[in-house]
Image 1 (cartoon, rainbow, N blue to C red):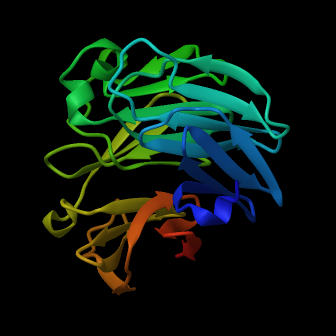
Image 2: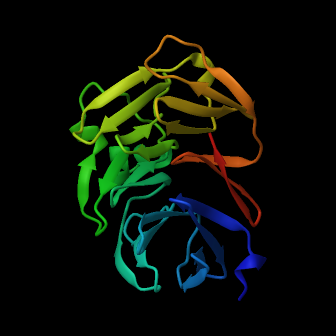
Amino acid sequence: MNETMYEAVDADWWGEELITLHHADGVAIVTWRANTIKLKLDLTDPFIRVIDEATFVIVDFTRDDTKPNAWTVRTDGSIETSFHAGQCIASVAVDTSRIWVGYGDEGIFGEGIATEALVCFSKGGNVLFRYNPETRKAPIIVDCEHLVTTASGVWTFPSLDGELTHIDRNGQIIVYRTPKMLHESEAMTIVEEAAYFVTGGELYRWAFGRREKPTRCGRVTGDLRGCAGGFIQIDGTDVTLLRV
């Protein structure tokens, strides 16, 4: 089986290294550091994220509320841990070996752990944080599609009111009300002291916490998702990091 025959379904950047995930015929094909790792996993809409130099995690969307849908895998292809991370998963981010999982509206208004909206797991699958019961006066998450991590913590853009939300390493929540023009953005990331949003094919920079209007940075194409340092763009078999 040649992984170049299949379109990339997800990818991640770690330092200056790219990891890609292809999926075909019940096999997950991971390419990382010039190695190809094949795993017999029946996936629907999976995510891949690097945890550290020796480990990555694959998390699947799934509508099932019982079977494992998260696997931490070593670079030799051995599976360290598998666990159930909830159903209808919309986003995944990794922060210092912790796995953050955000859920779509079908999960949030459904059953099981997905109703917590945003959950942080340990690498072994233990629950470390649940957004709904452990936050007070925080934005209501109805669909957690935008989720990125930085050195300061995790960021999400969850609410109908367009509130950029930062959960720092101490669990403190800081909320920034974004300009209305950014509320329907398709992708979001944080770089230093600014948030970048993609909306309608346009890239905007917004200095959160300041009374400034978003600045247009140019046009972008394709499906993008926020990651450390910019956006990942996947177009068929091609994966590109768009730095901002």
